[in-house]
Image (cartoon, rainbow, N blue to C red; front, side, top):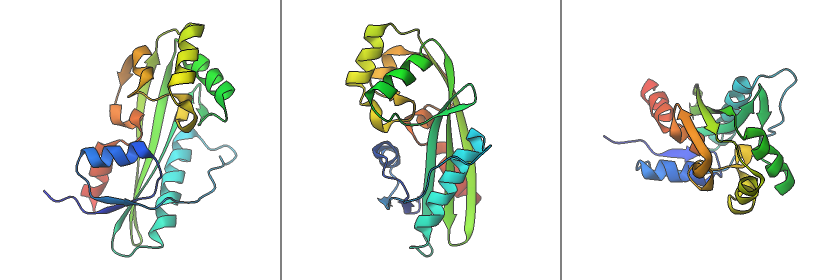
Length: 186
């Protein structure tokens, strides 16, 4: 089976790793778009819109090649929890996730010329109740600043994750099965 080459419209090292794990040939071309939430936009629409905008922005530079855009966010009580601004914000986010179940949503868009496919993956993640020492451990050792929700499921946060319901790779940053299903639609 030959997977077609793709342009990844993302600078995420985790998305690159996942594509590499499955043997997908790709190049990176980071999209520069405004990621501001729109008034009244729900989290599912938000991540799908951003994924599509990223892919379409980069696709302007490529003809007859697939461009992959993705956007991931963490949602608690229907509130989008993006990437932390600083370590204090990371601390606040981790405390918010402690002892609770939250959703990880990833919008995925695949664009080739004017043809667009968009999908959504949702995964539920449950954290153990964390004490102050454990929160501080994640803040100091978990490299939280470039991660939605301030944690990486595949790193230190794994110590505190009680349950994952849904696609593990979605929580890492790219639901690779959804990406493949979108390719099959072409």
